[in-house]
Amino acid sequence: MRRTHSSGLFLLFLAALLFGACGDEEEVATVEVEVPEGYTLSAGTSTVFLNSSFAYDTEAPWVSASSANVRRFTHGDGLYDDARTQSDGLGPVYAGYSCGSCHRNAGRTKPALWTQKGTDADGTPVYGSGEYGFSAMLVYITRRNGAFLPDYGRVLHDQSIYGVEAEGKLECRWREEEFAFPDGEPYTLVCPEYRITEWYADYDGSPILPSDLFCSVRIPLRHVGLGQMMAIDRQEVEALAAKSNYPEYGISGRCNYISERGITQLGLSGNKAQHADLTIELGFSSDMGTTNSRYPEEICEGQLQMSQGSMMGLAYDRLDISTADMEDVDYYLHGLGVPARRLGSTTLAMDYKGRRISEREMVARGEECFYESRCHLCHVATLHTRPRGATLLNGTELPWLGRQTIHPYSDFLLHDMGSEIMGVGLNDNYVSGLARGNEWRTTPLWGIGLQEKVNSHTYFLHDGRARNLQEAILWHGGEGEASKRLFMRLHKDDRRALLKFLQSL
Image (cartoon, rainbow, N blue to C red; front, top):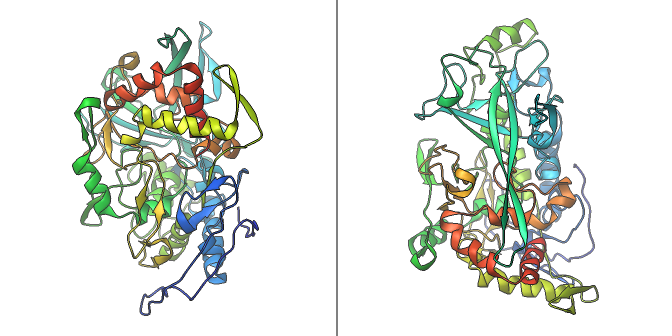
């Protein structure tokens, strides 16, 4: 995005400068946010009041209050969005050519899983790997025994620079089934069926058969609230895990603990809370093939693509990005504002059970239904950040993020999401740290209602199989089954109200 602006909707009062980067001197700062009518704070002093396509991609008030902060944020924003080329270290194989190619406007670029690439002989549409330099998806592959495939690693890179062969391509076919609510209203769900083609190592037949392959596809996550997530009080999350036992609803969340940089830590980020940080270095390496101090080897080290890249002029004798630059990207992600919750109009009228009520009343009724359906037992509305805020990958401290009350609507715990729906449920058979294939981190809901405006699509869940928010709810199984059943038994207008509440977040 690379711009700085003032919305005029809030006032900042800075009593003093905050910590320096070295943390030698500590002073108290007061940042007060004036909340416009019709909004509520979602992330304390990181809340922004935008409903536009830049709602995810705008600096937090504490960033715009300091020219030094703005410079780092803007530099990181540029590194995030600018397309990398061969000369910048892109490739030889990759998944996206920039962070922003998969996370457009810091959101979820429409994945190639919903872009038709052909048709089977019987007329079945075929979707899959795009032809435009990125797919906006990651393809995780293993043998059914959990072992990685020789000459591939954990991720299939379906894109490559000119003159280099991609590792393979993904094909997706969607199968659809019909269901009905207890009141008779019909609905359908679609389930993806994946196939890998064009294996560079001739794996179409032997030794890797489709019957011996697990394939898990992930589409981009919204980059909303990442700084606040990294500043969360870990003890509060662990306390939620200790008390997250609701046998009457079949719910029992647990933490994922990850060993990174030689330290075992609580996992917070990623679909399965499989990372303890924002994975900046891993993203540059695995997603773009950009070597760095933490991952100095090319992702296709030892493979055919290395020699092909050499023939195309790639040099492997230097790192492609510096630690300082990666930390500025980390700074940018930590500094993004979180959209305020929108309470709804008091004048726009909506139909509800045979009468007309305001949009604000509809949203309020939807929030009641959210709690009545026990969604809040996992999508916890309120958490707090620790006193010193967050620390970036190279040691810079961000105390601006400290001592905040935030509303992510997530407990950041792992929950079994079931394997029963359409024969597979949400079980992807991919283990991440302590997380089993059927376990997923509770998705934070803040900003979810603006995804269509930011990214022009409403595909949800880890692989985009849910075509709207209602389908995302209806895919809940396992520990989410009870809440789904409560949602399904609601009056039709109450179901609409609950969805309206989600759209307000």
